[in-house]
Image 1 (tube, rainbow, N blue to C red):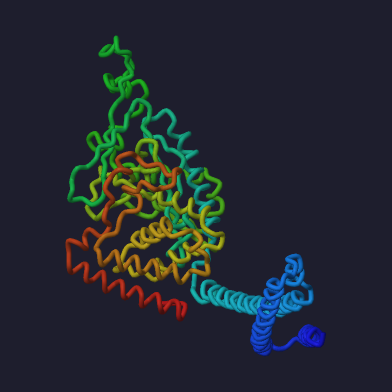
Image 2: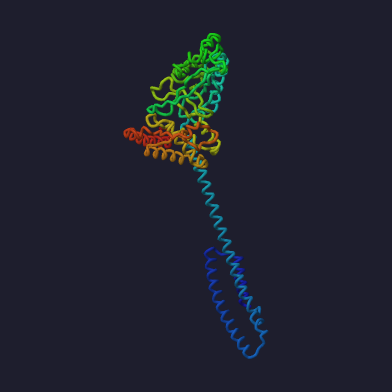
Length: 495
């Protein structure tokens, strides 16, 4: 009975006066040692009792007395009580340990949240205040540009109806401004492509240039007159462009396309640009924009360059012309490719598909994604003698296509810069950088490619470095210069 009182007093002391964690552990160890000693003592008593029972059995005692004597309550309940008491002490110790662990985890989470808030503030200060970004509203400029060019094409379509000049289709915005970034700090350049389709009685045939010495994929647009005769009347005196072009000229009073914008049988880029620029100058006063903007046509051989000013702001528009390849987002365009680009050469362009890719990624990446900031910063610190902006853009597109979209959160901005620089370094060392569009069979479904572009071997944008060791050494030095300028921008806000 005294032992029960002692155990009860001990239990009350533990419950009413909880001890520190270290003291509880010591108390549990001491209690376990005492229980073990008492258990050994109990085993010795039970062994003696079993010997006594055996002696009674030998003396003729009844077998019915054995179970009752072995299971008497006063022999079993003390041991059960000790086990319950041990379990109670262990439960209290476990509960306090869990509370301590939870408290520690909450403190750690609070510290991490405070660190994230501090990091987000520092990065926001770096991106929004320290680095000087262009201040123009790109979306407003894009909308204004598309409204201007669409007004031009609408007016010109009416003027050209009944003629045999190329038919102007709806303009397509492309390039950095339409992708959401710009490398310019002052006057932004907006680029649009105006697709051309053949006029009545004409057909465009695209012929691939087989000259391997010219970079990229180039085409020529061969213009053919369409036969509009019924088969059984071919060669007879009917209004057929192919068989009687002179009759068409005389009756309509209009020259055919081969007489105006072609050199031989091929559509001439320079003549096409000159024709469009003349129409723009003649129709400008008919546009509503002429009441608030002043238009200046800038000289150019392969594009129509416009500058618009209103006394407070100005912007430039570069109009290129193109012919669609099949039903796809790939065009052959009037853009130049090198200083000696022939007037009848139309290089294949992937700019529209690239802009579509950026728009697709804008819907996939987090709302505060900074991949455009990363591209814009690298383009701004890029020296013209180092790499082309398209090289940096290609690297960013490859990263967007391979790195999980969750990694493009603004808090990972510096990691994005590091990934881009590392990819540039590896590409320079390997002298190989794959073109992003040509040969890429994993583009989003909304971007349509001609079969030959999709199956083509990817172009190596660093092919010239593989052929010229001196150019490769210069490019590696330019890479280190780029890193140095980028570090200065991050530290001081400017190069």
